[in-house]
Image (cartoon, rainbow, N blue to C red; front, side):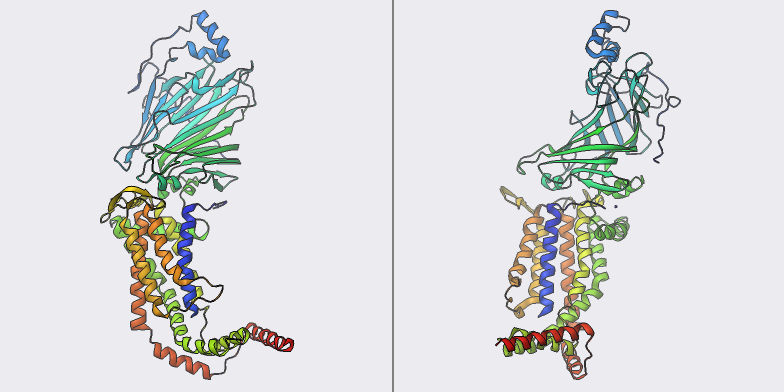
Length: 614
């Protein structure tokens, strides 16, 4: 995964994880296309005499044999004036649908004016529409040989639907046999459908340059939290044979790219993706944030625009594409083998690999026979058990440092006026005892990829959408136990219980591990007692609007961590035995490695130079 940009969600996650980790570390111390022909004339069966279901029958306009009408139309639109003299020159709608998708296509502009996902509902039980009531458009801009500017969204196409109702040809005619065509074909039970732009007999009608395909969409709100949904709503695209990029979360973002394989107008849990068999040479992307005030009940989240220059092939249009209107479900997207699963934000690098090859398959297995909430708990338990050997080493190191604490305090007091000597003697003590403040760092660092992978997984898990657990009615959104009569900045206008419980669990864990033994922070070091209180506070405030499934994970994780810690400390680790072993290690001659020996020599030389200066 290339050119990934961190959003606010990621920064908050890293801060929370980093804060907890920082406390843990401190305490341990003391990423040839084949062009297919879609909808060839042989596959099409003209049934213009058949009226499709839901089609609006237009009134009959000026006859094509009316020479005056043709002359007037050509005066205005040139060769394309012929289309306005046909019976189809009044707006009507044709419906194409299969088991999962329903499309309504207007002959005005030849474009989709309604796209409904038949198997999904919004947070308030309304149908999921990708396109409806003019929020989306597809327009082809070009110039004719007589220098007339044509915008297809204002022109009337002639529809022709196949006998089985699965494919539709929309033709913008300049004569009976010469035309510009948009072709749509649905397959059974499939979110992806064929789309093509092609022409016949237009090589002497259209200028070769300045041809622009403009695709626009205002993304409908589908989730309870518009601000949370908006964080995962953006334009993404694949370019240069496998790389991907996106516009980000700014109020207005503009990007340019080359060799585009697909363009996705991505929403949190639903997608509009335009794929091309032969890469677009270039494209311009513009994203505008429409959520200016989170307290306002906004209809749309973002406004998207993709502008793609097209090139004629032999003087004609011949663009073979596919369109996907469907869920942002990794498994569904992956099944197309077009790399469009990259729209799912699983995290970059190792975090994405952990999610894709371990966490996601295991969670899908669990959720296949368990309710979503129970599956999250079992996933959390499994992760904690998998990491328990690492945590055991961390706790052993912590116990060793606790045993050595009195002796370290003595050295600190004895050499309080000589920092260099104090450091030398402390290192000697660690070496003799077989302990090291760094011994607990590696185990803690090894847990970061898993923690952050899970932080990315739950907001992207389509499987938990609208799945309830306990008092939460949707694990992909926040839970509510109380509505507030006002809005608190950063917190919201409601109270979520899962973040509260998770914050309490974090605080208890930190208190138990730190207790009264927390040492005073050294000069230049962060105040760890402050972090101990700050981390639960961040969890409480910022996770109030996050997916309750994520808060459920953190709650379960911290409860298990507390349990493991108690078992290890009370039944596994014997501090007296560790103390005795340390004393034995002190008596044995300790052979230093080259690095340790060199470091000690350098410190001794520095000490001698300091004395000489005095």
